Length: 311
Figure 1 (tube, helix red, strand yellow):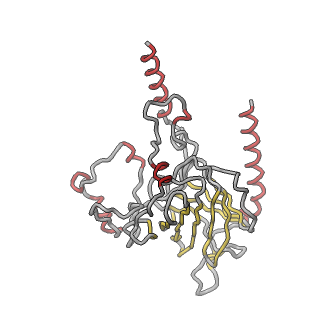
Figure 2 (cartoon, helix red, strand yellow):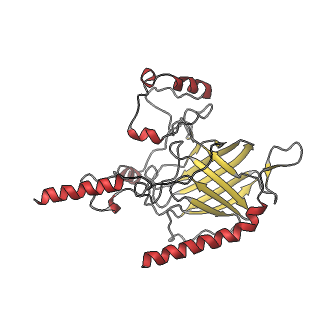
Figure 3 (spheres, helix red, strand yellow):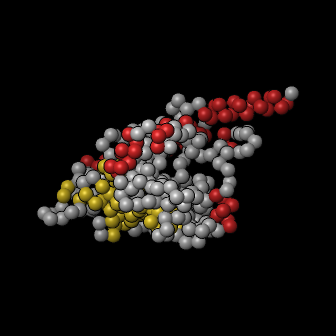
């Protein structure tokens, strides 16, 4: 009964929030070019316009390889490579999960998404960070309960997107005073205020953290903190801070980069850059549980093992 009550309250809160945004959403028309000669796009109320649906799917790895592997940074060369037989190129067919991955395009001129440190590698980790990063996402002796499984497997939350892998899509909607970012991962929807309000108290923790934004010239800067630490990002803790920067380059591209700061995890902050391209294929609802038999199979198997061992 309590769960149904909270579900109703949540739905009413969402509906009220959307209704309050309705007048501004009506005003939020398609991007309009600024005065002649300008290269920036502006909303009707004068903010840099980042609205639309964007994708950052890419083959460029997060870190620069150290095994001598060559990273293709030219989209045309990559297209030719993927026209070849997978066995010929040494790619093979991959795991069954490769079915869900869309490879996108390489980031031109970048051998890694990490741009700082300059070597394209993650900074040294603290002992505490190494210990967190070494934790298995899955229990070694089976799963007694759904809570034993990882948050993304339970369709609760994905970790922060820091690569160009599965589901790197963004839908951005702006109103005066707010930016809404819907990311194609679980239920991710961030309502980012732009009114200089103070952040939440440090003891208020959330899956997606607490975001505050402002414009620096044509760049939207969003700082997020107050993560709950339950979803590890390269071993990060609840002390993680993420500073994102979105800059509209032209009609079809946004320069995106993010800096991750967590002194309990890394020796110094690090930054990755992954350009976002206009998505022309449409944005669909994320159906995590739809047709997903994984949790049922995992827990049923554990129950069977328990019955077998009991005998």
